[in-house]
Length: 402
Image (cartoon, rainbow, N blue to C red):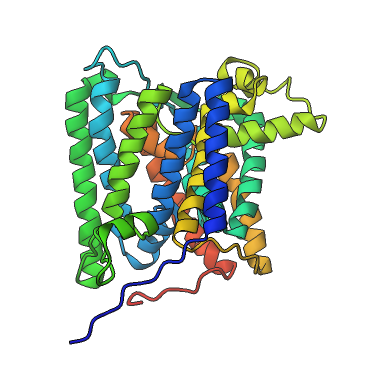
């Protein structure tokens, strides 16, 4: 009887040590200069980065796999994440626990969200990542995604300059299912819709392939659970539980759901103004939290801290798994699509009141109707983006039985 040898993991110890020292130092700085809350959010971000990288949990590649090949385990994991997080969020946002003060992510049901999400869907296929995917792949050492992130930031800044015009277009305002129906009826309706969607995805996969892939994954022979936890890869259901709990922690500590792209606009606008740019006439940066954030340290912004944490967490996870190996072998088509994709991602995220995390995930689990609009429009944009990838030579045409 043959025995399959378990894989040998060789961690990149210098990178692990540097990341741990950097994370510890920044945590102490945040604790001393700002508040325990800031340090906790940074650490939650590290947890998100580890989870995302070890499970390779991203919306871009999973949507593309379903669109091209009807393999839907990743998309079904997204649906489960919506469901589990909704169960955790709805009672809190519905004031079932009055002592907990938190607010959901609400955006308008508008042309702005419709167009922005569609553009974002195209961008994440051309750029190779979504909001969370871009951060954790940069942390994992993907050089192309650094290009995508750079132009993601540029696109977000441009979006802040134009957002006021987009908001003059048809707009139904913010629609909260919780406020309209009450948190328990709204949760039942939402879970029912998600269950139907989950079953539809299973049915489409089974119809194409005759089977349905499990979310559990298959560990290597002889591989211990602890080893898999430290070095990956994680089964998708681990990521669903981990991301839902970390999102809950974000809600309780920050007072709002997990978001990503506000920080990109903040970084880019600070750089723009430092180079002599004038944003005094831009409505977006003139009032409210954006105005305060622009005139404060970036370390005072909770989204920035969590984004930094995601990058460092992903770097730590990659180094522990022996996978941190930056590669800069890029063809012209990959560079061009990273630039175009990044610009579309940034501009679309700002118009849509967030990316796939801050707009879609946070919106849906907050009971905001705009999150569902984001999902439909974003997926439609991804379908077009998948076709454009073939035009640019990033993917080959797929046959029905491939």
